[in-house]
Amino acid sequence: MPLNPTTTELEAVLPADLPNRERVICSAARHLELLTEINQVMNLTRITTPRDAAIKHILDSVLPWKLFAHAKTVLDAGTGPGFPGLPLALTLPATRFTLAESTGKKARFVESVIADLKLPNARVLPERVEDIGKREQFEIVTARAFAPMPKALKMLAPLLKKGSRALLYKGPEIEAEIAEASREAASLGVKFEILMHYELPDSLGARNIVQISR
Image 1 (spheres, rainbow, N blue to C red):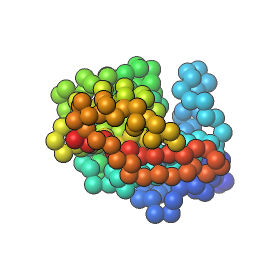
Image 2 (cartoon, rainbow, N blue to C red; image 1 turned 45 degrees about the vertical axis):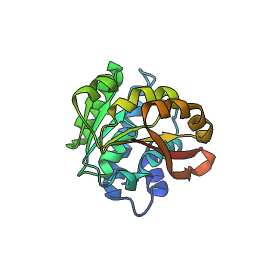
Image 3 (spheres, helix red, strand yellow; image 1 turned 90 degrees about the horizontal axis):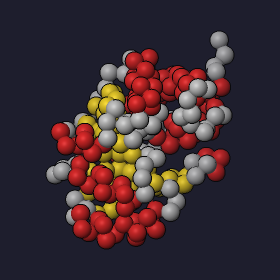
Image 4 (tube, helix red, strand yellow; image 1 turned 90 degrees about the vertical axis):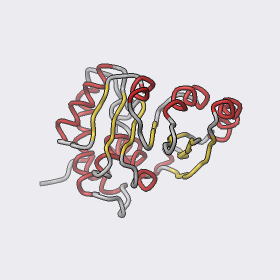
């Protein structure tokens, strides 16, 4: 039986050393299939071709997997249609992922994907990340398409209790974002560190993983 185009693209772009690689390919292809279906009635993504979706949704989500590998609990703030939380949860089954999405229709979609994929280490909460952080603690807080750094700091710094940190997926202008947020960071008692930089294939963008910690 021939592979569908999304599966073929995931086979081509995902790194060979990715944990649970075959499972990630199969389940991530299904996630993207469900996203394509729902996107016809609810605009959740502007990325529509199988290759672009494989790179910008899945590859981008999982490339920093080693930074998450030893955490027991991760909060994905503003997960949207499930990125980076669901691809990371497929990659790292021993880590418990909580996906925060305050927009109800997006949260319901993510919940349906988790059920479809039978993903035991992921859950979605239809709440603001600040409210979740008031009652629960996470080793890592992550976010991909989140607010500009000054606003992100205000929202996420209260969640960074002792021993926890934020890992944010940011674009090529990260140095300028950090400079803009430096005064806010000092007042909140947090510091920045760029842990990883990578270029996505097909010139689809540069990515920096920025750690925020006490």
